[in-house]
Picture 1 (tube, rainbow, N blue to C red):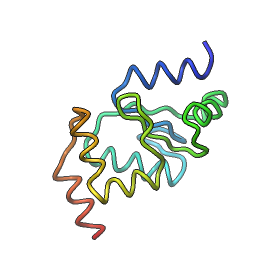
Picture 2 (picture 1 turned 90 degrees about the horizontal axis):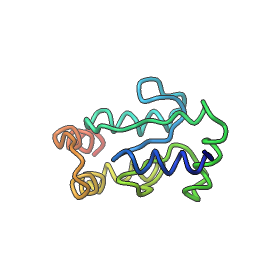
Picture 3 (picture 1 turned 60 degrees about the vertical axis):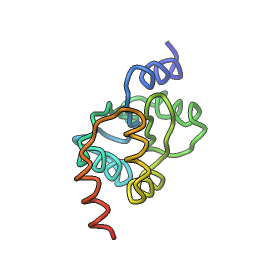
Length: 119
């Protein structure tokens, strides 16, 4: 199976997927740590894919999404964005809306606390 096939299967088989450097419990870059931290804090169940473990996946995800950087967040098979976009969406409440619309459970109070802390 090609890297693109593996990526496509992962993205479709999981409601929320984060392609990142490291894992959700041990991120290996600041940007990956920020996005995983937001998702973990908000109680979002997500699959993590460590792109450092497989060079084909690391390059393949950039081609798959036509997005040059890692991390990359997917919700219900759709590419949402990288660290800056997820940060902005979290602070504006757009991430809450996307998760709600997609039927993904999360801790609304935790999301509100992130915004309150960063106001």
